[in-house]
Length: 267
Ligand code: HPA
Image: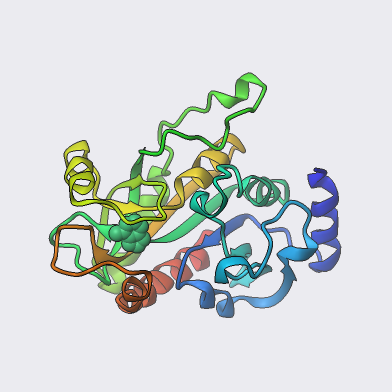
């Protein structure tokens, strides 16, 4: 796989945009791309090593553009470990963002809340994670670079910027630990009780592999979850994908507004 060719192709199509920030959008956040100015869109189908677009209903487009003076590239659509059992399915997209010049990666996702007070529709900034899957997207990497330091994996200075934006905008912003379960089945009640004892505040099936890949590629990382439901056993709800997405609306609006301001201030 020749990332350089993919990077050259993207650069040839994107009018000399030199993105400093990469974003990977999770479920329900796809419309965020509408805020980009002077944007160019490319289908994953035309990008070597990117996941197939259109499989299992997720979008598959790369968008380049600007918000104020910040040049940005957005992956609209990610693949999850549970879709194929391939743990490094997002390796090429993450490395492509780094090769395009991104120094920062921002990830968004939908998650279940383990915090009583963070009800569906809340937003949580990740300050750490627990990889509960036993797999790692760097399996098979050969150089000693594979032993990636995960100190400050979720950049402290960017977290503090997000908090001050949230304060200005009067948006409640929780902060906590995200635990990665492989899915696709939702968790059992016992798994959520265990996760809580381990120190988790939110549970989900994504993000962690991309964070590991991004730290390996030398990017700073920030990540935000929209709580779409209380985690299994914490309410009477029966969990389903459709129902979890219905609850996400308020959180999606809050997250979008935090992210837009963050990007306006970035440059
Ligand atoms: N568990 C795992 N992933 C999720 C959940 C959940 O409760 N909600 C949204 N994504």
